[in-house]
Every structure is written in C-alpha cells, then in structure tokens.
Amino acid sequence: MTMISEGAEAKLYSTKLLGIDAVVKRRFPKGYRVKPLDEALRRQRTKIEARALAHASSFGVRVPTLLLLDEFDIYMSRLHGTTLSKMIDNGIGGAELNGIMSEAGAYLGLLHEAGIAHGDYTPANIMVCGGAAYVIDFGLAAMSSSVEEMALDLLLMKRSVSSPAFAAFMASYAKAYEGSDKTEGRLNSIEKRGRYQTRTLTSV
Image (cartoon, rainbow, N blue to C red):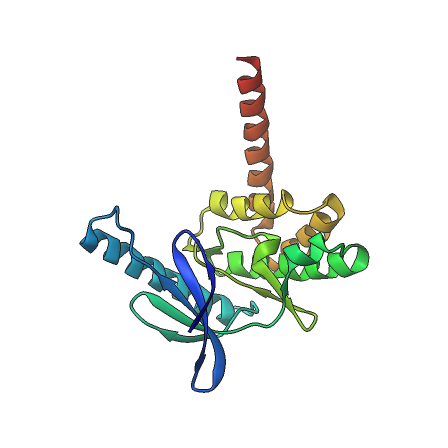
C-alpha cells in the first residue's frame, strides 16, 4: 500500500482489492488515550463511517463503493478525479460551477433525507470524476435527524463558495429534501448568532 494522505484521525492508502483500484482509510492509535478507550472509539467511528457510506449509496448519493470493512479499516473503490475545491482554485466558474453545485446540493438533500449529517460538507469533499460529482470523506458523519447538525452542513458550504454558486446549491437541495425549510431557517439562526457574538466580542 502507498500512503496518499494523512489527517488528524486516519491515513489514506492506495491499494488493490481483488484487482480493483481501492483506497484504505485506516484509523491509527492515539497515544494520549487509554488503549481500551482508544480502540473502542476508533472501532465505533469506523463502523459509523461505513454505515453512513452504505446508507448514502442506498439513497442514490454517488459515493465511493464500500468494498470491505475491518476493525479499524474501510476499503473503498478509488475515484480518479479532482476535488471541487481544486477546480475552484483553478478558476472554474459560471454555468460549469453552478452545474456541479446543483448536483452537490441535491446529494446533500438526499443525505439529510436519509438521516445523515455529513459533518464536513465543503468543496474539498466533492470529487468530480468524468463530469460527475461524488461525495467523499464521511469521517465526521453522524446518523442524525438534528436540524442543527444538518444546518451546519449548509453553513460550511455557504462559507466556501460564491453567492451565485450557493444559490444553485440551495435550489437543488430544497427539491431533494422535504425538511429544507427547517434547515434553512436554522442556518439563518446560526448566522445571526454568529454575528451577535462577533459584535459582542468587538464591543468588549
């Protein structure tokens, strides 16, 4: 296996599984945690991520294919493409960007319809392969019906893209998720809280 990247909780490796191009996401031990607790947390997070990935796929969200689940490892099909964040950095815009954002909005709507809060729904976790968008990295996902957690998914994307791109995103999101009025309302509430906190800190 060849390491592709390393995050705070896991390392990502490229490999092959039964001849299929695959990636392995491996959660590594944290030395500052008591070993039994560390293993329990890593095992739980691995199961939650795999479950969210499989559940998302069953609701029609385009995601990497779950190939194998081990104690601390998730084997998935490897996607060959470019993240939306890199495409934005390279100057993508206009109708092309809005088209991808529209697809990403529909997928988030389906995730929320399935009771999944992604936890890190940003352009860095939308990968475009052959013109089609995929949702990746469910490492912070939660099986949750919390309006607050779902609204935070919207907030993360809103803070990452232009207003026209987010408008295209929200239009598709609203069509895909029946509860969109509640999450959009909570998004507005979260933003107002943030502005209030900023004003309060500035006046101190």
